[in-house]
Image (cartoon, rainbow, N blue to C red; front, top):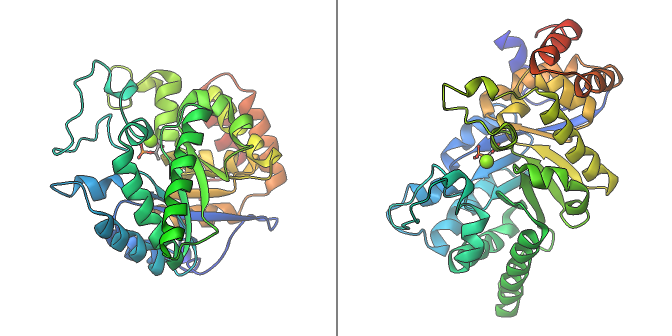
Length: 324
Ligand code: PEP
Ligand code: MG
């Protein structure tokens, strides 16, 4: 099998009936790039920049960040690189940035909420990204966006820093795409409104499932509720994809679900544009995709969103798609 998959390294990600998709890789640091290139990723769909902050004993400087971003963009050689701005809080802490003690850190001060509050930190990151943007095709996305005003505030800060750099004579790309992670149910429900303002969505199913089911996967007593194929989750995902496409925007997914062989046929049927996953899952996903017909999968997806339970959807996929 592995040898068969390896042959797909330089091939496109295409369904049996010839529809092209994008399979990207998730990375945490530039050190992950070898795996990305070895496994034939068509881009980086999620660069989790918080590791830059977590692996440091103080706030990383603009120049430090610039070097990392430049390295990733250059290595990807013109393929799109989606960089997620700092996603700190929840379970991720920085020793040098004390966060308030909170009863519910996962419902608290984190990610874009910190960036908008501590815009000094946010501006430094955006400046580093803007300076690096000339070395490749940069997409920037904001984590844990719940409301339109949050996105607009982040975009305004981005535009301000861009204007400052241009005024200083620093070259920046004029083609940076701005998007949001969809990982809060409120944003998934309101996707048709967001789609009119963003360039792209990337669905973060790890958090989206947890927040939708109000269940922490890491908590054994309730982990049975962590149900990626629950039709409620599938309906949210479908709403996000359909809303993006209604306004000509791009719909990606970077949560674990994107590389999951049970979910993938349904997502192909829904017309998801990009699947971003850990590099080691890419070739297997590309191989499975090659066997799927998009019309058949659209029928499967319609049945899945109309199902009642997670288990029913699993059975439905297993009876319609032969395991790779
Ligand atoms: C997600 O929530 O699905 C996601 C990709 O972000 P992270 O796993 O880094 O929270
Ligand atoms: Mg997340």
